[in-house]
Length: 442
Image 1: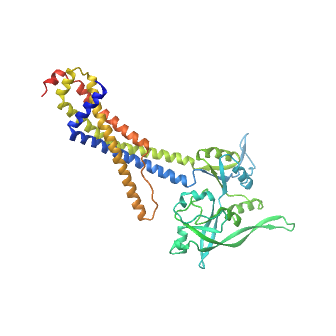
Image 2: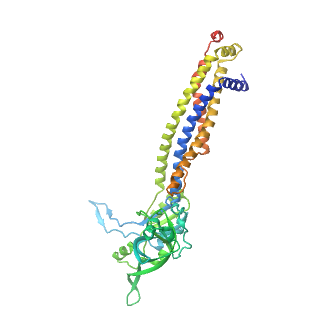
Image 3: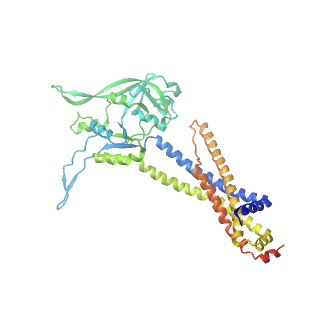
């Protein structure tokens, strides 16, 4: 029997029992829709998390700190403690060498310091932090009110929303106004010969214009929960020469004249290159780590999450396959005489099986296409409901579902395969009918 004849016969048989076949196809569509909706939710949440983390500026960054002095051991009758070697200083020379590494686009220090700001004659204690120009791409600044810094050393400040609410009941009204920053400046001391001999701490003030208010706190450096609540340009923070925790460490090491950094952030142009740059920094004698490994763990979690969503979504499709079995078995009972005539005219068992497989495949294909469309509508409804909820709470819009092209293809293919699997028993039963007994059937 030719393929064209099989197709015409299958379509004719499907039209004759239109209502029953339509309900079976609809059952497949519902199963595919539930599968697509659940998997698209898992994929959408994974895309959302990946995008947010990528925009946080953490997965293309390496955090560098100086190594602590460690005891050396020598072999023999027992360990002999040798004087520890001094760790390599994390100074400007080391910073320039890191900047010269391949794929490194930026190396900047983590400058955070406690401060006091004055606004309308009232003091407010807070934490100030320098922000690199590349931080403009961080997700924390996407929905900010106002604008980013006009220049790398502009006398401007961005307030975190909690600090802005402390300063005024109407935070938005602070944009354009000025605050006075009080900080401790590190000034070198000179001995009688003019050489530097330690440093002193001198209180200073700086007037800053508020240019923006950010809702979420930007990602912080090593071991910190955030950069600070008062954000200023990094270059400006460096020119202020504020006293840092590592200044006291240098003083205790009898090296007060050497300026070192407590930590550095190394920005890489491509996240896959982070590991190579990290190893190069470790070879230079520093402690370095990145969060790139955390993304692999996150991907594993979402893969398992998607798997379970797919399993639960497939249950409805399995139930729909039972409907296909029922429909085709009923078709065998109704068409026994027709099957007998086909066999009497020379149709082989293989032709009969192919006919029922074509009918099952047709229902699976149509059900898969309709189910994909319904699943997409469910996803859009989930996004709409989520964004309405977020909008009422003054939060930015997001997309929590995503249907990629490969999902659409796999959903339809899965529906066809399930339908064909469901048609195995009815097709085999139809092919095994005795043509003489089938012709006697009324």
